Image (cartoon, rainbow, N blue to C red):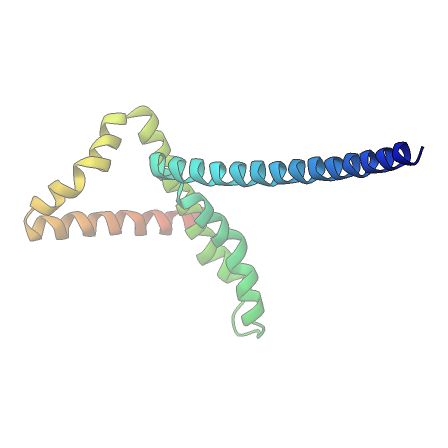
Length: 157
């Protein structure tokens, strides 16, 4: 009888040990699966941003539209600058311009893939081959276009 009792006691201990070990293995597998999921999400996000680089400005626009007024309200506590006016006339058009550029590049990527391919692969090389005056004209045109869009958005909104 004594041997049977010891055998039952030992089997119970081994069974408890195996159950605890299985539980720990399940937790470890869960942690590994969460880690693999997180790394795959990060990898896919980086690949998405690399392939669809027109969307990099969307998170930046969200930060500008939501984060900047909150941070400015912490530092500008005086009545010298109206935070609502500053937000409406300066920060909001910048955020809308960032969203506008994301939408425009998305449409270019979907509808005119040849133009998108040219901008992704050949524009930098062609820009380097241009004369300095041509580079200055193209740069000033782009800056002027963006500035006029910003002014138009601030007037409309």
